[in-house]
Length: 237
Image 1 (cartoon, one colour):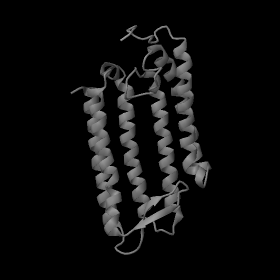
Image 2 (spheres, one colour):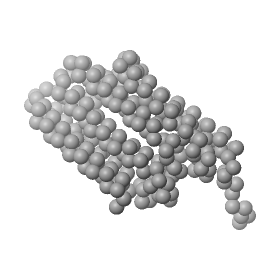
Image 3 (cartoon, helix red, strand yellow):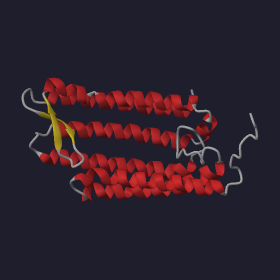
Image 4 (tube, helix red, strand yellow):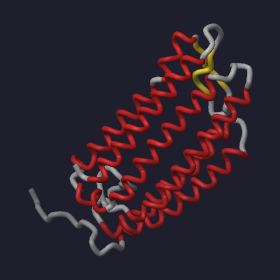
């Protein structure tokens, strides 16, 4: 097993233990009677409630997600046709892996924080949603910092038809995408504490999607001028 995969699995195991521990601790601390908030809308307000006997299902979602995500990330370097490129860009892959595990653990803490507040107390849910959005913004800053260091692969990075058939297009696209994602993440972190209502939840998504679309369109134009673009095999049958 490659060292970076082993490190990622260790991070996943730690995240799984933490999220499971948070789930158990939170469930034991929940009141026996009354409605418990288990889901929050993009405006930060609780919009779904459950009894304690049903709340455990929601607390187990994140530990399950951590487990499945960790196993998937460990598998990808083995099944990607360009696995050598993932190995070359392993720092970017591992940083993203650890960042995702950290974010999922943080989200589990936010869910626990929100559940332990009463349904009428909007301070808990509003604060929780803002902190989770800010953490997502921080993750995109990390991803953006490492994107220019990635190499062409089918499962990691800005994958368009043009970046996948030209190393030049891949490199130039990710040099642009990196700063775009960092700016989107930084603006999203600020927006987590500046916006309210529906835009509280939507602003980061709009920023990240915009950054991805700009990078995707740019990849086409740099591919057109790339010396190594794939011109086809020349076969007629």
